[in-house]
Length: 404
Image 1 (tube, rainbow, N blue to C red):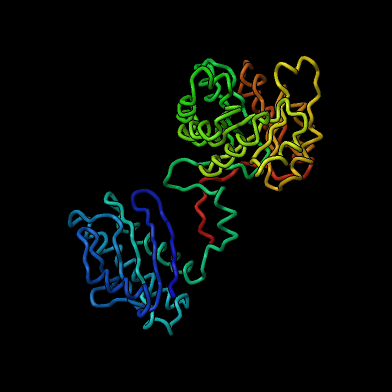
Image 2: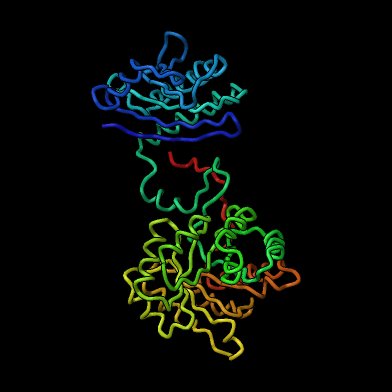
């Protein structure tokens, strides 16, 4: 039997990241402990944690440096502040009852320690590694995080070191800005002007794709590093190939036409799921979207009820009465609406349960795109307040320390 713990604390070059194992001396952790201590690795020499020379804590704890030690300056950090921090955290965990006192002779710990070669403030190195080790021990003993927490946070949390987010659509409604114009300079200007919001998605429109190819996705990614980007392929054939083309350019979602064959759509959705991106089916010109969805082997992530640009002049009414029925097919299924939507008409779609409002010309052809976007975001706020839905921005930068 063994327990696993992890914790990250601090900031800057003194940041501490701890991975650890706790287990019986006569179990797999004990065997790994003995092997590591007796089989040294250049640059990653294991060392016992000590409170001071000749005073190790119990349970005995072995430190494994994560970063290759290249000189005595590196060695002094791990053999000094790092070694002491881990030892004190173990000893305090015993004193505070986190580690049972009746287990101190039976258990051993293996602690993997990260200390950046450029770290200079040894007080912070000590403090961060002490706190991270103690938190990791507490989490291991309490078997945290629990599965519910993992599933809740997996699409919501931001890794503080990665530097960007990979957004997921867990908190509708969203405003999807359809970049259907083909002037890249104009698009660049729009992206730079629109407000920063986790409610905004960017759509690489079909005309834009036809002019520049899927490489335009990567070009837009440089301008919108952490924004959810939809690639409107309107796939009708070769579903696997088109999904892969968009995926390789960092698209978060791909769009197929509901007029494609069952085989193409099934392959399209399977490939998107395999690659970890969203599959979207556009129901433009599909007579019965409900039956179309039911005919497929699996449910897409998003369905678009779409009134085409060329039919808007015919005063064709949007089919928003289908929103609730479509969402009733699967609780995770999101419904987007598109086709000449304004901040005023959007309200009816939201009240019917729309999750994504797709808007093109109202924003991209506006003199002030930022103001146009804010009209929609304000409309979200006022409409959701009327139907008691949560509103507000997401705190992506939060590092969760409350799992103890």
